[in-house]
Length: 144
Image (cartoon, rainbow, N blue to C red):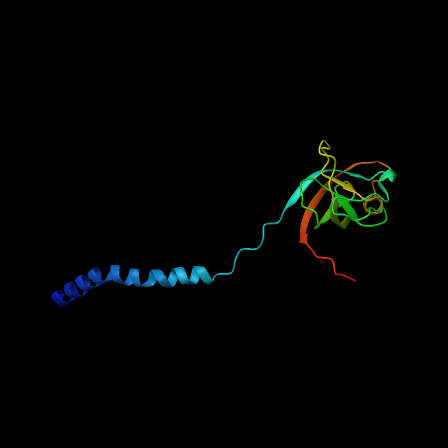
């Protein structure tokens, strides 16, 4: 009986590396089919202001005519056409706006909102506020 046990142990010892090698492609195939991790959420914190009246009717960087009544914003760190959720950190109010313009390159603020967006966030009387900006993505406008 001890000889049979020794023989089985020796065979297992010799076949073990072959079994491990045979399972490696299966493991890599399973990893390849695993779902991709979700997109990284981009969140930025900074100071928000709002457009002055003099910009109403002027052309923005994306070619649209600026209107203080629309839910738009200017930002230097995010690309044009990006939709973002802006949250006022003082009162926790949020709005969703489209980035359709750039700030002046020397401006250190994170985002400049339309007056309507600033009113909904509740900081028009203060002029500026601390905000959290969460990138929602790029959405394409439908043609009329």
